[in-house]
Image (cartoon, rainbow, N blue to C red; front, side, top):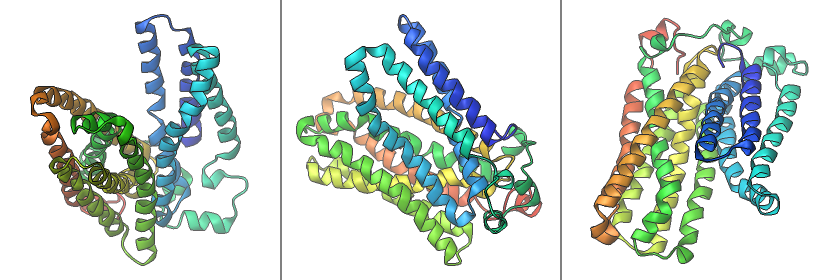
Length: 362
């Protein structure tokens, strides 16, 4: 993405996974389906780095948080809408068209993307005043679009890179635990899913709201004169502390109390993760933004795989403890983002690399 540019990179990515989605309709058997799904994930992996790079190109630092929240929450909205599109197709025509039609929709998006998106310096409809506003905090290389990406090993020498990786690696596994295991947790608490449905979907709404509040709040602080780093870290602190409210759920089986605590925790998580997603565009020059975003996504993926393995093991091992089967898991889920918060505060700072111009000042 950093080497070939945002416009071309996302075009290739969307074309790739839209084609794979359509080809999935030809799968026969488990291994064929698994192979196509692997290829789909390989193509989709460019979405977040590409979106983060697009935000870094088009938005000044006081607006990047809100712009990041917009694309981040879009995935949740898409996940909520998808069943209403895919299931009617499935029930009417079967599973093969249910893969093919979403792939066609990807190509419709691609047409709009190619028509609308250009880097600011190359956009045919941008005014000089708009360009000055967008590029006010950029270096000359950022504005001109230097496409020579830094090497991974060079980027990994910077503590800011590890802070960015940790920001997602210590938060995303908790979110996927909530999205995939919350119904099972409620059942373990003795709550029937029929009466506990409100606890399943309300945290998702809270997360969407948290995305926008976290992004808007950090932008507001920057406009009030706060340094970029202080404005971002204030939201990180709020998020890291807020997620610890998962822990008191082990003390109750009351549905309202559990729901309330999960709402606050997911709201806080989303505020934190918005900043985690915006950090690459704050810290790095244009030719490294997508690379660092990709590294953080890789860390988040590895962390989630490990977390799910451990969740399954410990929940099975503690089945005999009934309503307390998930207690250690919930405690860890509440503490891991808090530890991540501390590490981000320690690692993401101005240092010698900042003075040398290798990392942007925050």
